[in-house]
Every structure is written in C-alpha cells, then in structure tokens.
Image (cartoon, rainbow, N blue to C red):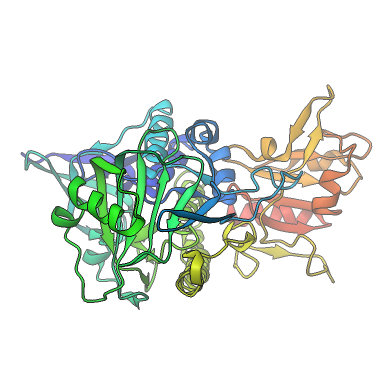
Amino acid sequence: MNTVETNVDVLIAGAGPTGLVLAIDLARRGVRYRLVERAERGFPGSRGMGIQPRTQEVFDDLGVIGAIAAAGGPCPPVQVWEGRERVRTWDLVERADTSPAIPYPEILMVPQWRTVEELCARLEELGGTVDFGTELTEFAQDADGVTAVLRGADGATETVRAAYLVGTDGGRSTVRSLLGTAFNGNRIDETATVVADLELEGELDRDHWHMWPKAEGGFLALRGLEGTEAFQTIVRFTDPAFEPDLERDATPQALTRTIARRTGLADLRVTQVHWSSVYRPRAAMAERFRTGRVFLAGDAAHIHSPAGGQGLNTSVQDAYNLGWKLAAVLRGGAPDALLDTYDDERGRVAADVLGLSTRQHIKDRSSGSNGLSRRGPETHQLHLNYRESGLTREHRDAVPEDALHAGDRAPDAPCRDASGEVFRLFDAFRGPHFTLLDLTGAGGTEVTEVTGARTYRIGGPSPDLLDPEGHAKAAYGSGLFLVRPDGYVAVATDELGDVTGYLAQVAG
C-alpha cells in the first residue's frame, strides 16, 4: 500500500540524540516535522555517555536537563589496578566549581540509552512521536522540496513530501549514501575495542572507574552505569589482526573469562550482556553538510574517536544549530541563505573536534600506566565559537582577545528581577527567541521596542533586571548584545540600529 503525506516541513531520518534534539527544537517552534527510525526501539547501549557542560546548557534550554541530570552523575575517580592489586586513584577529568557564568562546569555521565529515553519523553510532552520501524529507502529533491519513500516493518511503503530532509541516521548514513556525498577520513587505530553493558556478580565497588592498563592481552575497564545495576566494560585488543566476533567474544561466558584473565579477579562473573559493540576508531567528515534541501547532522556528518567524549555532544549541537535556522526560514520568512551557515559553522566545529578527539586518542595510547589521560576544559565545548561566521557581527573596536566577542557562547549570570528574586540570564535565553541584552546603562525606551527579540535592560534608570553582584557586567562588559536562539552572541555593538538591521536581515 502506498500513501502520500504532503504537509511535512521537515523529515528527519534517524532518532538518536541528534534527531530527537532537532525534533524537540522544531516542535517547540511550531514546525511540522516527521521523525523516523529504522530500528524498532531507541538505542539500547551506554555508548556516548559523557554529556559535556555545553550540551548540558543545550538540555537546559530544551527543558530536559533536570531529568537527564537525575539519571546520571559525575565522572567517578579512576582506580588503577595491576592484577588483583589497587595501585592508585586519580581523576580522569579536571574538577571545577560552579561559577556565575558556567552553571554546569563538569561532565555528566549518563548511559546513552537513558539520554535517548529522556529526550523521547520530552518530545512526547511537546506532542511529538517517533515512528520506529520506519526506514527511509530513497528520496529525490527538486527546487521546492524533497520526496522520500519510507518502508515500514511490515514492508509497506509510503511517500512523504517535505520541504527539507535531515539525515541524522548515523555513521553508515543512508541519506549521505543516497546523496553521494564523500565521507573523507581515515582509521586512527588499527586495533579493535569491544564495549559491552552487562550484569556482574562479585565484589567490585561502583564508586570508581576500574582500569587495568597493563593487563595481558590489552587494556580493560569496568564501571558501574549510573542509575542502573549494570556495569560497562571496555576491552581493547593489542593485535591489529584480531577480529572480535560479538557472538563469540561478547557472551557472558567469554567476557567472564576475559575479565578473569586480565584482572586476576576470579570471583567476578558476567551473568547477562544487555548490549555490545565492536569498533576501530576512525575520523571522517562529510564533504559538505548541506546539499540543496538535504542536510547531514551528527554521525552522518562526522565520526571520530570516543576519546574525550565529543561525539554525542557535537551531534546534539549540530541539531541545535540547525533547528532555529530551519524555523526562521519556514516560519519567519528568513532567506534560504541562512541555511548555508549551518554547513559553514558546524563544518568548522566538526573539523576542530575531529582534531581534538584524535589528539586525545593518541595521548591516551601513549599515557603509560594510566590507560587514559586526563580530560581538560578543552573537551567541555564551552570555548567553541562562531567568530568567523558570516552570521556574526562585531561592531566594537579594539575588543581585548580575552573579552567576550560576537560569535562566542553567551555566558550565564545570576541577576535579580523587580521582586528581588534570582533570575539567570539562561532563564532569559530559554526558548526559541532571540534575546537582546542592554548593558549600556542608558535604559532607553526604544530598546524595548525591538521587533524579533525579547529585550532585557540590565541596570540603568529603568532596568528589567538588576545586577547587584556585577556578574552580568563581568561576563559581558558594556553595550548591546543580541543572543541567538542557540545561545551565541550574534551582534555586539553600541548602536541599536546594528541590532534592528541584523534582525531584519537574518530573522525575517
């Protein structure tokens, strides 16, 4: 049976974290979308478990950070073993205190399946659904849209017409393959690694990430998965010629033998394997992220080593970047050229992140007895910026390099509203709108009349917000700052006309 669906603005192929975040963002903007996933259910494994500070800020804006934080916890300290002997304990990540500008300073550990579960729940709150067991098999695009064929689990097909198609369907992306887009890169490690989520009997505390870096046969790690009774194991193999077979090497019996051989802890027994995967790290990136009316995001656009915990985070932020732009074109009358900036901005970020992940991977492999090396603030993604983007307008002269620039992430700051209650700038940003911060101190009424932005005058004669501790001033300095819907400073200026002109051109 073949049916035709005509009233879809955006078709999203792939319901991992990338597709779900894009669907959530479009749903809250009133954009009609359809989200399809060829699997029968959400991703079942723990891979992609480190949620970096910048992604936590994205989840704050999307209204899901509370549920995800409750399901996770901080990165535990590493317990290094040599056989049955505990050698030393150290921190894999640099610990940091919450600051006025950075409310989420550390990585949050959450199994990916739980993140997917909470994102699905948030989408349902917004009235959305995922069409599981539905695979995109072909598509064609023309000047006005994309026509795609979907196949259900029962083999029936349907034809969907959409204004735009977004491929969020993973490293083996069907959308990318059908586009014929080159996926350039290379393998960065010839040895294989098996990752598995399992039930473990025996005495092993859940307060540490247990690692055996000098184990015979290769590195092995075990850690308790937050919010569950399960453990995750990472098993590396030193022989590049060895090809792991999950049906042979990831059974409860095989993993029990491997753990006993590499750790010497003969009382540990794997009773059940929930999920397993094998990989050889590769770094690759699509030649382009936009081809006409078709976009690539997440692993469909870039893959890299899991070292440093960048994959899920970069993917989520792809969707966050693209969502508001699609809505601006589809609902706000913005020019189609706005969508070209997705390729430009996220392509630059992806290239930087691939480099970071590869360097971290090499550093891990050369870290001697640790097995992994420390992750510093460069992995938090708070310093990624769009300063070079065509969407960025820095109108001030001689801005110090260490000051906030247009194109930078917009910092948080606790202010006070008229009642004296704490009101964070992230509270002001939360939602699908542009935000104009007036820190000129002039308090002009004309600022409140800017079309296309929600305005907050901070300080001055007629303030919307007070800054008694000076946190906003310390983070931003003086001037007018237009913040994009994805939390980056679009315009930094002293002239209101720069803001209104920008909004007329970009927001439609």
